[in-house]
Length: 242
Image 1 (spheres, one colour):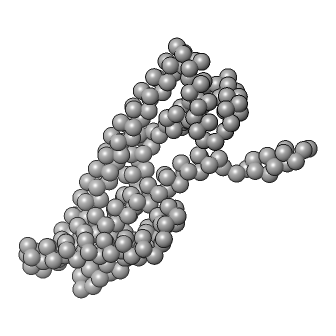
Image 2 (tube, one colour):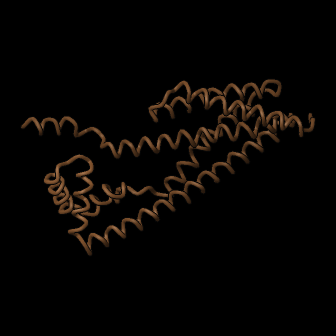
Image 3 (cartoon, one colour):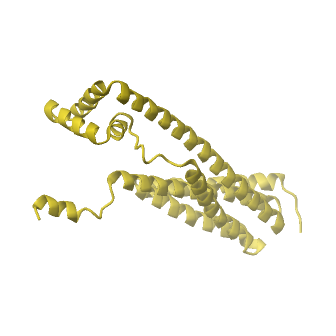
């Protein structure tokens, strides 16, 4: 076995950069969806808790917020990804038509792209020729459009991922304010939400190779401010019940 074959074999188990990047994007989106669920639901239940001591009212408001928020996130993601997918398909159809009607021009265009990336004209022409002979559409879609024809995102997959991640995040403040006694349920919710936002802020920062401390402080700060404002709004417009 040659040295090149040894190297290829040694790295055969490692994920491709594109696949790894796609997985990280999905994971980051899931973390951010959970973060949205935590903050928005916490704002609702703390606001209602500031308005009334009725546990049922707080719980129902939280459940309504969870359902509405999860469906809104799922619907928005479905529409957004569907629009993106339709645009990508239209671009691929146009590229396919151009490859069919003027293959030589498209091959020269592909070679020019690789020249701009630093390859010599001779090597760029050879790479473009070999890639075009192997799978012209994939080669041109990746180089010109930044699209993987076999890896278009599913709108339904994106919608379900958003719905589930938001719901999981929303359960944290909902349970934290529904289970403890009335006298300290708000503080229990604040502590639980701060802990949850610490985790989501840290994970999202690590996934994005950003500074964790700044992301965590920003994340927790926004959540605490949201609960503070909604609590006093609830207190201002609330009614006293037994």
